[in-house]
Image 1 (cartoon, rainbow, N blue to C red):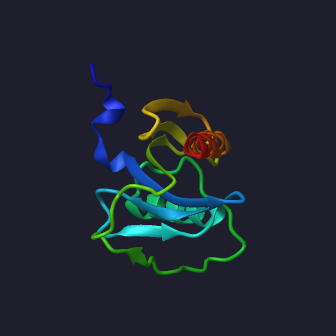
Image 2: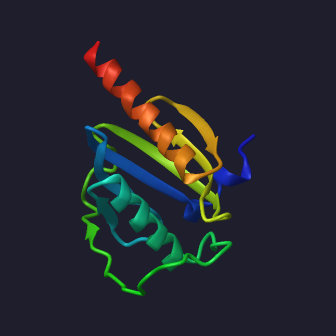
Image 3: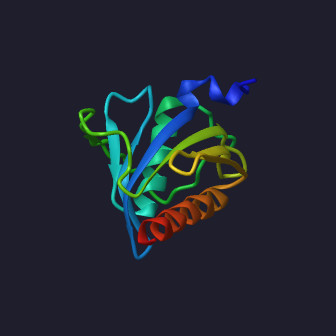
Length: 142
């Protein structure tokens, strides 16, 4: 039986990691509510752009307001939809169910490894993604 989290496309972000050299990730992410994919060049860039995308979608709504020193707005610059929607290093389907306690909660599916795990924070999400990227590198070396 398919769970409720698998049925809501707006909650799902397809994350394509193209490289993860020395812990610096680069790639793209896609969502059904975005016209184009969004590229990122580092982990911080990924997290900041994802948070901004979630804020713009108002879904899932943030439990608390994020505190900032400035209110500077930047325009999103997306990647072309013509691009392949799989990562060169790894591909993940991230379902964000909640944004509580200034973090994200949900599940992540590593498509190449066919494994799914829940996460309770952004830090736990990063650990899961990093573990999959390291496993993918190890498998490619063999």
